[in-house]
Amino acid sequence: MLLCHVTPAIVLRTWPFGESDKIVSFLTESHGKLTGIAKGAKRSRKRFVNSLEPFSLVNLRFQDRAHSNLAFIVAADLAFGFKHLLTSLEKISFAAYLVEITDGLIGEREENRLVFRHLKDGLTHLDEQSTSLTFLTSFELKLLKLAGYQPLLDSCRRCGRERWDQCQTRWHFSPRDGGILCEFCSRLRKEIFSLSTATLEILTNLQQEKSLPPSDVSPPTGVLKEIRSVVVRFIEFHMEREIKSAVFLRQFSLA
Ligand SMILES: [Zn+2]
Figure 1 (cartoon, rainbow, N blue to C red):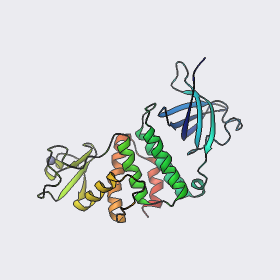
Figure 2 (cartoon, rainbow, N blue to C red):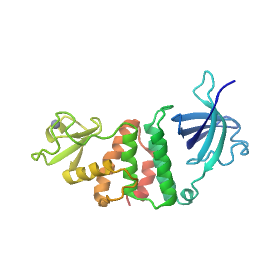
Figure 3 (cartoon, rainbow, N blue to C red):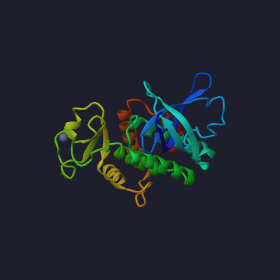
């Protein structure tokens, strides 16, 4: 008899499989990202009543199957539906973006309860509050930290020159180096993003903020856009692909 696991989970993606089944990808609280097969989910909605829609928070019951990476989904009972989130196209596009970058930065079966809680908090915020660039940026920065990719901003990643060195007025972010480079070292890299000292300061402050969105940091929109172009590229670098939902999101967040 195969062991049946139970865990809270958020539906990340679903796609049809064969005549009547669905493949579903979840972010679970206790088993990391998990992909499974929901038998009969396409044909009969009774067994999975509205619980396999994207962004749903469910109580998932699953079994691992021998010789397969796909788990068998026994049941997924809806725990919370984020009702307001689905009422606006803007909120849906923000939520799709949060889900896509979380999906892209987390590996299968890597348990990370903090990332689960972070995505749940992010979706809850979108459900209850209005959207903002500050929220989005702080979500991205915290996710990078929790997934183990926090950008390093204290000193040049190649030569170690300290950021507080007064001779240095411009710094450059290098996705490949995972942090900043000084003027000299930046010439050795093809892909760099110039950052003014003021922008770098705000990026550092946002990164240190614990609440989501930050309570006492509200940077100017121009600075946020500059920071986000760096952060989005950095996330894509680690995902090793483009963020599809970013294009759609741009209509709302960068207008
Ligand atoms: Zn350097």
